[in-house]
Length: 148
Image (tube, one colour):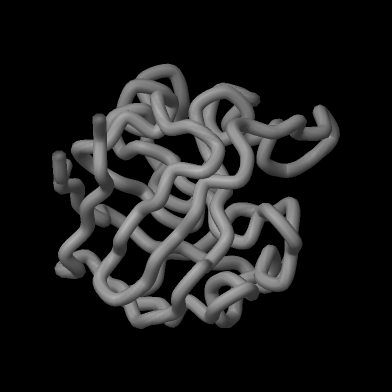
């Protein structure tokens, strides 16, 4: 069964370990990641995903200026339980196709991300994916995954 979801925000940073900045659209390149992002080219962590529902919940205990990208996520979603995804699950974002490769990650306690937002975002609630098929995405891209 097809389950639809939305892209709420797309964010990139030029280097790793720093908050990402929102952009209007992105180009995902096969076996590489998001063009212009510091994590692109990684073997298994090409694109990071975090549910906007989790971001909003985590923000309650943080300064009001914390926003999308500050949790180091590339794509903030709505309507998909990122935590329930399994390694190997496939996501369709517009023409692009992603495969989940990792759930969560270790975040160094001395990193800017940890100092700003703690370890409740990507480390505990996020997922990483590799780009199986490239394409352009934005917050109007039709997105879905198959369940069951």
